[in-house]
Image (cartoon, helix red, strand yellow):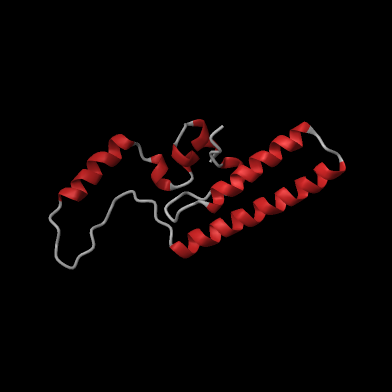
Length: 120
């Protein structure tokens, strides 16, 4: 993922489809779409990020659980020895939890809350 981040790939190159440039994806997708549709046949979409709903729910739950655990730990530390840095991080974590809660089944679930786009 570090290499994907360095190359400014979508989603930091987390999925294999992120590594294929749009100039290659677009003509292939158009060729798939141009194929005649057969009755009772499923139309395939090339380079589609797929994750089963069950897998997405598990990944989202795992991310939410770890983020909440980190929030609890940070809140305890802040209660004992408050700092401005911890206050800022607490705000970012709370914002990340709201984003995680609002995730839809087609959204990418990162491994940690740090890689979420918090809109800052």
